[in-house]
Length: 476
Image: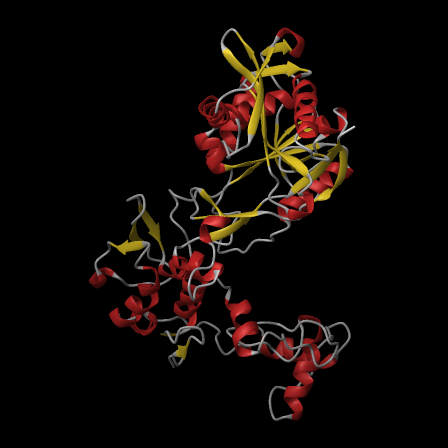
């Protein structure tokens, strides 16, 4: 018997089973369990009638009992005319004579299926009875027509679980071989979203090995049971390669928004550094990422002293070009910048702006600080901070505030230049289509659409970072 169609309580779409589940995930960014809790139970998840804990979830409904209280469900069902508890529950042939007698009675020729086999005709009838018709097949895949094109002719279809159909990805054009069952469950393009150790993670580990470093991949010895993608034991540095699709809300397996921060905090407790890289950073700013990693293990190829360099105030174009080419987050507007230069140009730069947070209105904010890629400037931050402090004092500010992205570091460089750690920002996030990130401020609420609704309409999901530490230095 075919399950009846169910109307989506968000938009009225009619669907059943996996078709409805895929619709809710694709169009509304919700797992079916979250949808059921929010729109069928008014945001209140039912509790177990026996112990009060979370109940089991199956097919758009919550059960009356949790997994640990299933025996109570059997008893309750028996009282209401349903299944009563099995008479042999907890018994064995060693403890109950009835089981011994039953085993002897049904063994060998006493078993009703003894010696029986399906004929070729009966197997054919069973196969035909299980095969879905054209309308059912199309109904099961129509929710993903925007992602894939079915290449296998419908007249060749014969099995949901055993036959591999050809699906063409509309993003990359790659042809994927998937069973209908796998496709219904949300399987993604194997070329756009490779499973297992990602290409970027392999590239990072191979690059480090080429430099003669000891590298451990998929390591679980340090933060057990958590896994570190790439670990350098000699430097106690872990590198996490975070593919945007699998680490965002777009992932069909779900995502814990605090996962990156939790792992970072666990690393700090174990006295190690953890460096997070998003896949778009590795693809588009690889040299900058490599420079940052080398800096953390003391292997930056070019080393200069701040006293050897000249302090300048670069113009807007020079500042912008420098940060675009050398800072992992590019450039942002600033009131003024100070830099150190050598005969080749800017080596180290720090820009200042009015703070975005009103609570720091009496302070100037360090908008960006960076050195030239593959270059370490000893004392560079300290010298530029002293110049910035003098400027802030002249302009009547009480001090300077800055933020250290916890994906990359705690911010010890600011500590060494006289800053005081005063807290953190909490989690930050971006939106992504699985390939690149966009700033959340570009997906603000508009008209009658909320931020989340606009993001869903654009096919975007959130991907979370670790937030930033807040450092303050007062004007002396």
